[in-house]
Image (tube, rainbow over all chains, first blue to last red; front, top):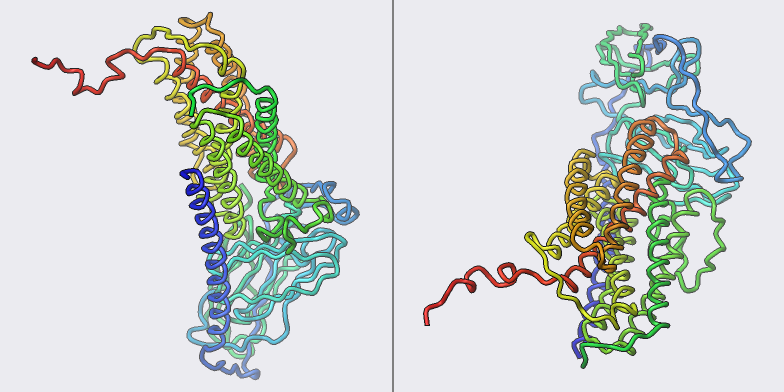
Amino acid sequence: MKIRSSVVLLVLAILGLLLLSACSKKEEQASNKAEVKQAPAAAPATPVDPATAATITGTVKYPGAAPKPVKIDMSQDPACKGGDNTVETLVVNKGNLENAFVYVKDGLGSRTFDTPKDPVTLDQKGCRYHPHVVGIMTGQTLKVINSDDTTHNIHPTPKDNREWNESQPPKAAAIEKTFAREEIMLPVKCNQHPWMKMYVNVVKSPYFAVTDKDGKYTLKGLPPGTYTIAVVHEKLGTATQQVTVGAKESKAADFTMKAAQ
Amino acid sequence: MSLTTPFNEAHHRFATVVAFCTFLLIIAGALVTSNDAGLAVPDWPTSFNHWPVTYGYFAVPLVGGIRWEHGHRIIAQFIGLLTIVLAVWTSKVDRRPWMRKLGWAALATVIAQGVLGGITVLHFLPPSVSSAHATLGQTFFCIVVALWLFTGRTWVQDPRMQLPTKRPSLPWLATASAACVYVQLILGAAFRHHGIKLLPHIISAAVVTFVLLWTVVRVLSEYALVEQLRRPALMLLTLLMVQLALGFGAWLTRVEWGREAPQPGMAMVYITVSHVAVGALLLATTVVLAIQAWRHVAIPTAERIPAGAAKPVAV
């Protein structure tokens, strides 16, 4: 009898745990939806007069010699062979830093901006993310596609947004997600292919850019004012600079990051 | 109800198989963590939306992280089946009531272990749940090893000895060894799953080494002729040395060299998985030694009788 009652108790306990786990999952999903729905309820966008709009451009530099590219071993998945297989953590071309995220950190006051209707596309190709760093506005859609002949899973590990983890087989429909809160350098990884890492930068304004292979960036359409421009890099950290632009003015703001330790 | 049972060779052999397969399961679990593949299959209890029973186990290409996570699930489900058979078999053939309970306890533990594994996947590997999953896995291994020991010929047929001891008594010393190794495994799991820093694990390693060496020296100096104690003590000493070397290797490959690595390196995977596996063997060995010590070594009276009860009473 004792054994029977123990077994019944055990089964009940397991069912309880399963239910608890399923409930908390549903609650999470429900609260995530609520969060996304609440996001667009912000104040209407503050118009920027195109006739006075200013531009900030610049180059992000890396001091010293370019680091030797580290090789990735993709042999664990035959579908991954053939592509470029060096790490993108620190890409430097002739002293210019690629994949740094540049944005207006401060100075926009209480201005609000419309969320772009076009999604930002993230492709998984050759078992790498393209692009390696993206910028996106809060509430804007991130469209994830899989161009590989293997299954990937997309797993953002945010601090301030909701975490999710979804697998995407070859030729599967695109996964579309939004991020409700601002978050810089939000890591995204694939648990099938541990070398696959990229960063999403979620901001409230459209004034952001990712440096190209020449380390260059452009922030267009800024209203005249004084701004704190921040450059963030996954390995080198953050650098900031104050820049004042007048109406129709175009200013340069170059940055030199600290060398990697 | 009986306190003794006849030796059942088939039952004991089956317990041996379950213990060995559980050891393989611990290795499979360690491979998942070392390859950073814990979330390669995002759903649970389904795998890619298929229930285990109806799911074609090998329909999914076992590549990348899926190979480790899905492989771990397949082995775990197989161990679950083996444990059901072992629990039922034990309840049928073993006359000792506590052994039947231990069989059911093994089944309860393996089910709870599966549920913990599922919860940690659904909640994106929280360190506390992942560490609990790792620790409960080791606990299950110890229970199965105990079942293997209790079904063995020497346990069933050989008489108990009443060997003398000095303070602290060997049974308590061996129990302290098992407890220390268990705490060390919890700290190791917590570090591995990003719950704590490395320092507590290193400090604990020094304490464990001291207590284990004390225990081994006690056994080899006083009970060298008692096979039931000498064998686990010698194994403990060997495993301790190997484990210390592996611990250093794990620190080197994972913490020092692996800090900037773009992916888990082969050396890091081999060494950290070996560190987990040898840790499991070390814990099981201390448990076996403690059980044998409690069986064969007589505890001094003063330790057995509560302090108040030992006082002289006027008649």
